[in-house]
Image (cartoon, rainbow, N blue to C red; front, side, top):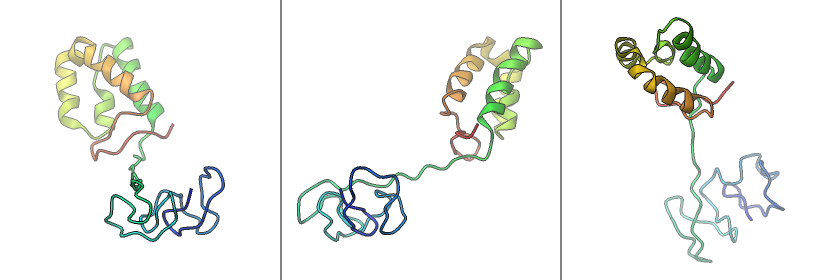
Length: 132
């Protein structure tokens, strides 16, 4: 395996390239299979024919997953109010809709809880809620 950022050969599958300090698949200048220099827009390495791995950029929200999870389920169980977590995430419209429908009679709230626990829920800007 070679670093896509600097082209240095890597031993095993390290998290960080010791040659440039970047994540090995974060770049787009070199082939990860043979280390040959590539066009940043290319999808296949011309030298070896390997499909080039594209770096995936994931935006992480500054919002807390723990707060989202608790605001999702606790108010609904204790006082019957659902949708507070949507206000916390900046989703005012769906928060109001959840308040008016009592969280879709609990179904919508349960689905949001299932998405919030593993960190698959997104805030208003489309960023994943990953940090506890």
